[in-house]
Length: 266
DNA sequence: CCTATAGCCTGACGGC
DNA sequence: TGCCGTCAGGCTATAG
Image (spheres, rainbow, N blue to C red):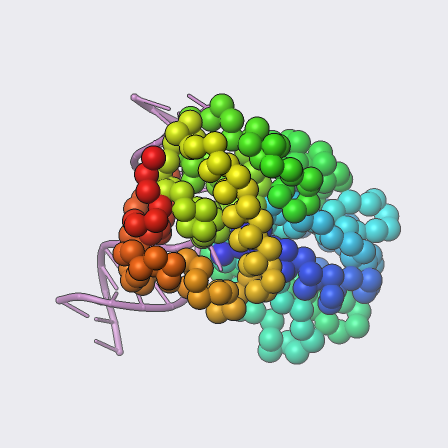
């Protein structure tokens, strides 16, 4: 699930619930998700400390931990990760892989049934981004149209694959890449060099339309406008904009939905 | 640089 | 009901 808008919602949720509370205990029930940090070290960094701030870059959430050796807890949600803050022990999700127990009796659970995700510890967010070679984040970074154009310029691959490449642009996943292409009227298999000049502008506007709209809808598909593609994905029904038949095709190994009538290959 | 493929994990769903 | 294949909003390693 979690792409940029989803992780942004997780971030706001965490900010509204779990900040500035003392951590009394840490439970790691899936140590295989730890990346570059041991259970002991993670516990040592967290217990007795507080979460004080958060940052998001692409699909990564960084949570600031102050006191002792300062650093950031890094969470990546894979396909099925999410956060849950609760007091009632019965509300702790079944597949919680990391749990912070606050001294106020509440718990912050990192739930992730499929275990495709990562829990890490970084001293510097910038250092991590550089090490991973992540591209700019359309919200966290300043990304004017010309900069967006430069990101794609010189690439030869398919537009959808390129937009999902986290080293080009951080944050888009399968669903919102489809949505963006749908709204821009661009066929997902269009090669970057074949894009018309004004297509870059259309993609740029669609990018912000989609991520801002999705965040406004709390990244909940049920809240999205009916004229978006997302509520119709998988139905193989009619395009809500032009009435064309929705089709699906495999692009870069991912199921891709698009409208065959108004997203013409060029 | 680009593409295709397989693999990592687990749960939900549909067909038989 | 049970079994089995397929699929899933992510990412990496590998080979060509």
